[in-house]
Image 1 (cartoon, helix red, strand yellow):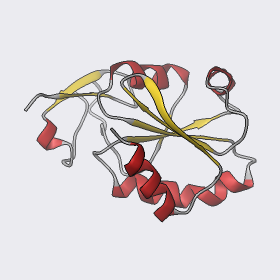
Image 2: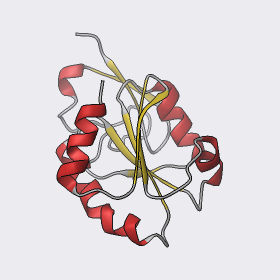
Image 3: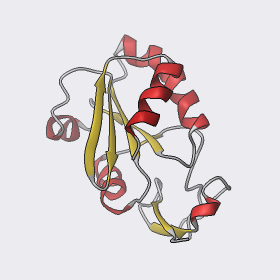
Image 4: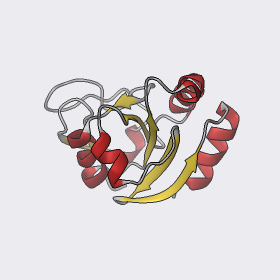
Length: 144
């Protein structure tokens, strides 16, 4: 089976991983930190762009802000789905206060907003907070 390219969320190095090892504990060949974690990674603009351009795994993004009540309410559900779907997609968070350029680039008008990216482009978007079961269903339906 063809290897999968995964971008390290810590150093942005691209790693080739056998597809059947996506459920295993994987470490970056450059920085030796975990490639896939059971919790969403907070990314800056450079890390997000590296994930988008080089990773073969779909990217599920939570655009949020620390002052947003619905964002904080949905955080445990997002964390749970990230854990449950580890290896099927990479779950990340983009703080729209810290990275306003990405929020503007993707025309994020309300938070939380969830988006799924595959092959370098956005394939699904859902504004508003969701419970874990609804979020898992939505992500599963959106994944290619």
